[in-house]
Amino acid sequence: VSQPDLTVKAISQLVGFRDVSHYVATFRKQSGTTPEQFRRLH
Image 1: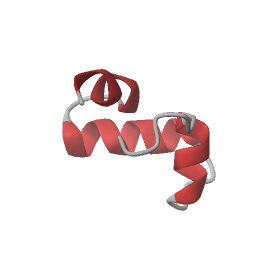
Image 2: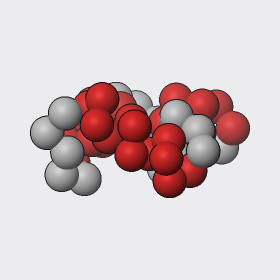
Image 3: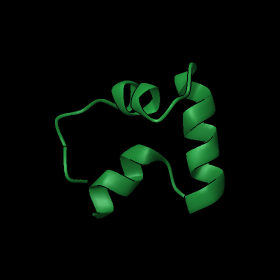
């Protein structure tokens, strides 16, 4: 949210995921929404 210019891929790498799809699946499981949906809401 604080850095809207970062891609989801870049964020996933920054937080330690090697595969962006695994990051998205984990994010969705924890938050109930995808990273892109989360961005639009916040």
